[in-house]
Image 1 (cartoon, one colour):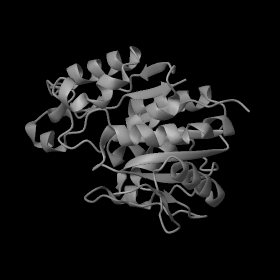
Image 2 (cartoon, rainbow, N blue to C red):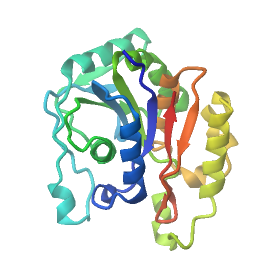
Image 3 (spheres, rainbow, N blue to C red):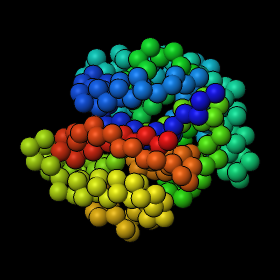
Length: 260
């Protein structure tokens, strides 16, 4: 069986589901370039827990975990099947790595999962297992989660971290736009790309101190933490390919990374 890459996807606003724009184009191109996975595991920035939790529902619901958007967005569903057996396998791999995990049979798919998957695999016919992140435990913990799950890549499972390369929603009121980009976005995006290209995991894990404008780009870091799941799953010699999907609202960098 072909060993799949791991991915990091900037999922953007929930409105990306209705207005996919350039991210939709890039995700469709990526899906066409990938071998078809037998299942997908997604670590989402919108499922936060103190310890790893794994969604084990057989038919996970579509969660509309947002407010104030058009009614059409709330009518969207992503009816992908779950994969209870794979969820149990994820839990076992995490347990073996000393990262005690809990199965959650009632967990559905939040918008960090279903919005990008709707653009990658619109038929919703590939089983999906959601995975929580642990913001209190930091990048090194998420990197270890990815390392523990790396064997799944050789089993036909696509491992995805879903977040955002930059994510400062406090700046939505600052008047940034396509014509007026937040000044911290490009330096931060460039630093991440350079460190990934260099394979400098140490600097990336210490990004809060080393990256330019880290605290402006991520006042809290839950949207960058899924990157470390994908990076950990990629292995020490992985090649990072940046896929530029633009910058939304002048402040949300929509970069996608493929790790082979």
